[in-house]
Every structure is written in structure tokens, then in C-alpha cells.
Amino acid sequence: MPQTVPAVRFWSGWSTRARLIAVVLAIDVIAALVSCGVIVINARNAVKVETRASLSTVESLVADTIRLLEAAPAERLLQTLDLRFQVLRHVRVTVRDAEGATVGAPIGQPRPERAAPAWFADLIMPKIEQHELPIVTAGRTIGTARITTQPMDEIDEIWVYARALSLTTFCINAAMLAALYLALGRVLAPLARLADGLTQLERHDYTARLPSPSSHEFAVIATRFNQVAEALSAVRAANGRLKRQLLTAQDDERRSTALELHDEFGPCLFALEANAASIGRLATGAAEPDRNKLSARASEIAGIVSQVQSRNRDLLNRLRPHALGQVPLADCLDLLLRDFARRHPETRFSGHFAGLARGYGELADLTVFRCIQESTTNAVRHGRAASVTAEAREADGALMVSIVDDGAGFDPDHGTGLGLSGMRERVEALDGTFVLDKHPPGAVVRIIIPVDPHRGDDPGSERSA
Image (cartoon, rainbow, N blue to C red; front, side, top):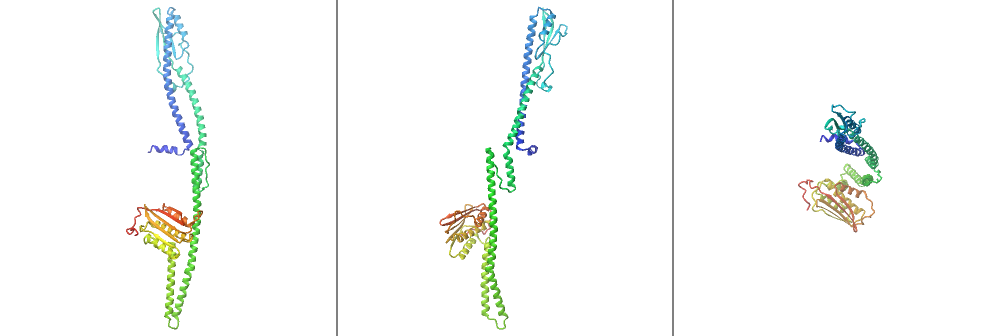
């Protein structure tokens, strides 16, 4: 693992274009090294073959010349050999007389200044070979011809060829890398636009849109990006509407609570105050207090207190069901429907909650309660239903809830009010599903909420009968 960290750090700051160029450049370098190796191996074999062939050819020519001039004087024969082999490639011929002195200059083409560098010559240079042929005439040895291989002639030619090939290859690769750099700039341009778009999304600017590039892969990415941006924009707009509806609902709830306190509790408190003042006057009068009047005032106070308590329970139950979590969920739902039946005697309410556990957690219980409460309210208030049936049961590891009414139903183009939005938000927060559908002649609300198998019910969570 420690060996890979430097490589990761080395690549981390590089752009995609730079990485691709570096990969291509690395491939070029590897290909150049392989090509150089092949050239060196082939050149070494070629030089060896060429020098050996030249050596054999020159040996044959020297032998033939000696045989043809065998009858000539020794001095003339040596001079003829010296003149005949002045121009040779890949070999050098040195003619020596019987005393070992060199006749004329060393035979062979004089070498110009060496073209190949020493390191290149060392890579290719084969072993220098040297042969000596005796010069015999009239049965007498009059001298020797020393033939020495000169591979530098062939090495210089190979170097000139390899240098030209290398320069050509370098120019072609440089032009290819430049073209690749420009092409990658155009091909990868959508990535820069994508990065800019993501930056806009990060800054909560959901108006960002990407143009569709010509590349199929980038076109798919741009399409998906635009769809995500549109979805985020829609969600933000929905959240904005929901927040406005929530603020409106809070204001409406406060206004409704204030009106109820004023219209219901205000007169009751005034009546209590009036009865208390009347009792005070009766108690402080000079005559004996009229027990019947005191009893009547006490009865009136008890009735007013009972009315206040009833209104207080209704108000508290609307704000937060006080029995939820204290009694089984099925009993809370039954109590809810009985309360609806008391307040709306013209509508028939029925509930089927057999088989429910005592509870499924505070959030799940409250969600089921509020959904049934809101759906029933909508059926009575907007659908003017004559019958409402609520059912809740546990099956296949989920809570199945349905509320069916026979009211006027709903318009297909109906808007999503705060009540429906609130129910949907509550259910989806528990990974459930919420469906509002027609159920001629009315409507039906179906809710499915997954049940946590490890919720850890208390020992008293037996199923409802």
C-alpha cells in the first residue's frame, strides 16, 4: 500500500487531458525503446554478415590476383596488389614484403571522419577479424597480405539511416501529440461545462442546463444532468409551496384556536364570573342566603365547567391526541371515529382495526391517526359523504390503511392541498406509499407503511381482538 500512495499523489493534480497525453507519450517512449532494441539487434547481425562477406570477397580477389601475376617479378606483384585494392569497403588490406615492411600505404578506402557516436558504435560493433594471406610466386613467399575487417563503414551507414528514421518518427509523434492535445480539448470540453453546472447546483442554482454535445456518452450525461436539475428545481418549488401552505395553515390554526377561545371559552368564563358574583352577593346579603338560588348557581357553574372541559379536550385532541401511546392504537382510532360520529350525526362512521398491535412506534402511530383523521375530515367537509369506512390491519410486514367514503369524490384536476401534502409527506417519511383514487361514487385513500420487525413492542403489545 505505501508504494501506491506516491503514484496516487503524482496523478492527483493532473487533468484528464494531461493524463491521456502522458499515457500516449509513455506508449511512444516504450515503442521507441523497443524499436531501438530491434534496430540494434538487426544492425549488429547485418554488420557482422556484411563484414564477413566483404572479408571472403577480398580474400578471393587477393588470391586470384596473386595467381594471375604469379610469373611477374615480386616488386611488380606487390605494387599491383597495392594499387588494385586501394578502394575497398568494410575491409583494409595491408601488403608487406618478405622483410615485413609495408608496401605503399595501407590498402583500402581512406575513412572519412566517423559519423556514428561512440555509444552507438559500441552497441553494434562486432569483433574485429584479421586474416593474413601469404604472397607466393615461383614457389617462393615474397610477402603477406593482411586483411582486417572495418565494420565502422557499415555502422556509419546504419547510424545515418537510424538518425533520419528517428527524426522523422519524432516529428510525426510531436505532430500527433499536438493534434491529440487539441482534439482532447474539444472532446473533453463537455466535462468542463459539466463541472460548471455542478458548481451551480452546489450553489443552489437549479436553472443550470447543459447543451447536448455530439458525443453519445456525453449527450447521455448532459440529459441526465438536465433531468436532475429539473427535478431539483421542481422539488425546491414544491418545498416552497409547502412552506407557504404550512405558514398559512399555522396562521389558520392560530386564528381558529383564537376564535374558539374567544367564542367558546370567553362566554363560559364570563358566565362563571357572573355566577361567582351572584353567589358572592347572596352570601354577603343581610338576609339568610336562598339555598335554592345557591344550588342553581352551583349547577350552572358545574355545567359551564363541564362544557369548558369538553371544549378543552376537543382542542387538545386536535393539537395532539393525548391518548395516543397511552392506550392501544385500535382504541385510539375507535375513539377518533366516535368523536366524528358525535360531531357529525348525519354521517355514518365505521372502523375495522382488529389485529393491530398495541403500537408501532410514536411516529407510525401518529401518522396512521393523522391520515385517518384528515381523510375523514375531507370526506365529510368536501365530499359530503353519508358513510365513511376506515380500516387498518397488519399484513406482510406492513400496515395497510384504507379510508373509503361514498361522497362526491374529487375532481381529476384537483390541486394538492396542505392536508393531502401533509399526509403524503408523513407516509413517505416512513418509506411508505400514499395513493388517492376514485371509488365510485366517492374516493378511497390507501396507505402502506412498512413495519419495523425489531421495533421491540412492550409485553402489553398483544394484538387487538
